[in-house]
Amino acid sequence: MRYKAPFYEMQHFKTHLHDEAGTAAMGAALARALVPGLVIYLHGELGAGKTALTRALLHAAGHAGAVKSPTYTLAEPYTVSLAGQPLHVIHFDLYRMASPEEFLDAGFRDHFNEQNVCIVEWPEKAAPVLPSPDVDVFLTVAGAGRDIELQALSEQGTRCLDRLNFAPNL
Ligand SMILES: Nc1ncnc2c1ncn2[C@@H]1O[C@H](COP(=O)(O)OP(=O)(O)OP(=O)(O)O)[C@@H](O)[C@H]1O
Ligand SMILES: [Mg+2]
Image (cartoon, rainbow, N blue to C red; front, top):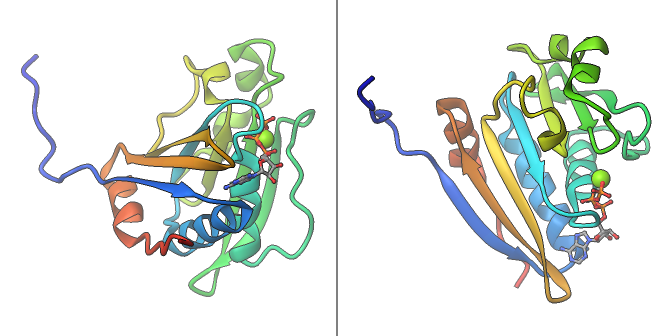
């Protein structure tokens, strides 16, 4: 099959988050840039800031309660509001998943539809069965802060990153 280049440029964005406030600001910027149906993969080692970023996103999107890593439940649903409409955001942490089949058996695929936003920590654990991402986020410890890289992988992901209006805390 001949490779066909997409007609749009895949958006790509890289910056440094100096401290937790930087992560909070990025989460808030992402919350404003969400589009229904979006799938975001969060990559990074333990303690890289995947949950911290998700927490900031959910709080900025209007969730008032706590946001804990769904370490044992593997998935936690939230309802926030986007442009006045309710939006379901499902936060996954697949670190403790024993096999990809567990993802299917739990019925997690049903969460991935055109209405929901799915944010997935440790997507590698369900790689063969996990729906593909619109945005790949890579977090790495860099000195006292974190480096973050966001890569759009679809037209919808590009739309999200095009909207990202992030002012780094210098
Ligand atoms: N930009 C930043 N600079 C320095 N520290 C940060 C920054 N952002 C978050 N942190 C801190 O890094 C830690 C990140 O923990 P968090 O639970 O979010 O990691 P995680 O990537 O979800 O790990 P796990 O794989 O165990 O779920 C927290 O202690 C948080 O305060
Ligand atoms: Mg986490």
